[in-house]
Image 1: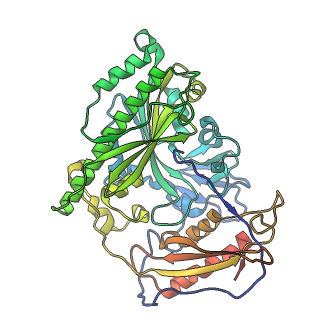
Image 2: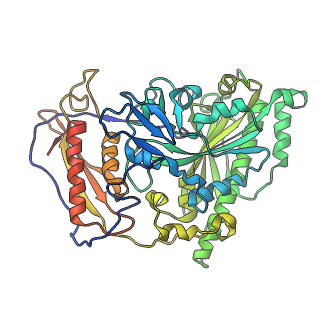
Image 3: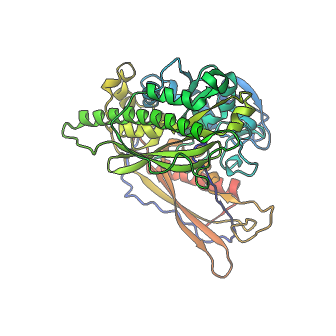
Length: 496
């Protein structure tokens, strides 16, 4: 989990007042056949199915049955997409992005792991990486659980310990689909794809057990580049970015950091050189500033020292990845205490959106031929990569839903320890589960606390917009009413 995720809980209170249910469009619509990436009533695929009963006792994912319990919170629309694994679909933008990155980390030094199962234990996902018991990422509001001890991985790092333990190669890349309950907008999706990379050295295998000399020798073997790099900070800092003094010498950490940074800089050069070439194909007059990057000190729970890499592209500084020197406890717990090295994590959709200029993350899940055929043949010839050409922009239909939070919530005024809290991600899940990819974004537009009673009211605007056709008012009204009713049933709110 290279980007640390924090959650906020909202509470509730209230009495019923007038309903707010506004249509913010002109109502000019036409009727069509399909909506978004799936139909409104799409069912889970045969590879991921659940019982229809409210008290499910088991769930099947990729042909394997899992027992469920009170922690089970994974909806059917998530399970239905588990088998798709976009990073393995040839000519898909996520697949192509994976290919480009893998080309910078060649075999046999790096082994590619692309088929790890998405169902992991809580130990794999959290404990093996040192996440504390109270870390917000463990909450049901953030993570899709099958049962208390089993979940859909939230990051590729869930496989880090087992890959270190297997010790099949000096380096590795793991690419996989990961799952997180999250907000609804054009850049967030509850399923996305990550790549985890690592490179290790073994004290017992290098001459004189001198890791620093061995790593610097490997740095000399790496290609060079002429990209401008801004790296003003020291290799480590006692307060801001500490050295693991119990395990690493200053020379070792500096050498590993240098190898890490050169490797990832070469990756950036490869990605953004291809992005600029694609821009040039789309517009022969395209001119961009020279490529430059900067290293920023950061914190991650499983590396130290740690950094984020930012790229200046298109007139903006873009955060691309997180990385660092692997915490030695991870190697020790994996049974390979003599090893030390670096690791990084990167979001494949984020890079693909930059490469192809795709502005809506929902498109990656589209099966519309107008989208998919634009990338045909690119996997076999990366030099043919070109920018995505939008095929349409259908009108949106925005609806507001306003409600009082229920009075037994801490955020609503009741601060008892056992009070149930409204969490925004729970509302987002209701919208996703009922409307799927028909919803472009959901935004909080009003947050009101009554000055006398302390009761709290929230208003969200749900923007319905299909990627594939114009929605009818009837369809949107029906969906929105289902959202409102389900909020009352599942969240206990009182509509205004």
